[in-house]
Length: 252
Image 1 (cartoon, rainbow, N blue to C red):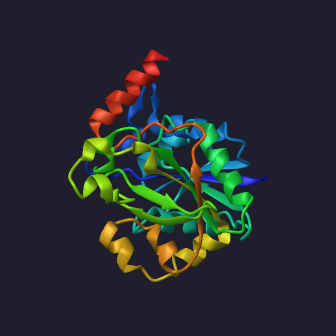
Image 2 (cartoon, rainbow, N blue to C red; image 1 turned 90 degrees about the vertical axis):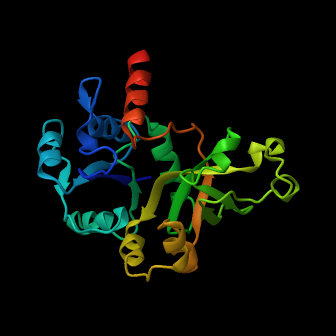
């Protein structure tokens, strides 16, 4: 199975400016992500950035970096530019790994690539079991439900599925977290579908939920999904997240 990993690395971040370059145990965060992706068995790993400083730092540990436009509205648009710049064949699998996931397991990358390779769907992703009831009601934790054939039915910031026997009565302490799955933001696409995706009209659902993967379901395409074999650690969005990741890596 051949697949390519693309790591978008935007410099701008409202909660943690310059996030890709944040120092973690002597290395910039983006280097940690790159090294995890390299261990996944990918045929090629490319970092795509829109900022000269990130480009220059990445050049210090690899030549696999591309400068992309700074006017993209989503990570998928940046991915489409990379597909064009690399002249990738429409059938090749492209895995989008977020640049703020320094604790991502290499096995997560290879798992989502294999999930797509063994299906006819144009796109695949992963989920993880929710262990804390509070996470069910956290809008920053995206929930997902799927069918018996590992096709995603819906993604939402709301608490889905709705456990009527407990939520309706307000007895949230009786909820069984095993009934809930958290979406893990790693995607595998066929390269041709990435270009097709950006030509699709935005859907009301994705605008309401602020979840761009809903555009795929809205237009009738399948997204394969299965539970991650290794539960991914949370990524870095805030200074507190960064401190947590540093503490974890230092302890190792």
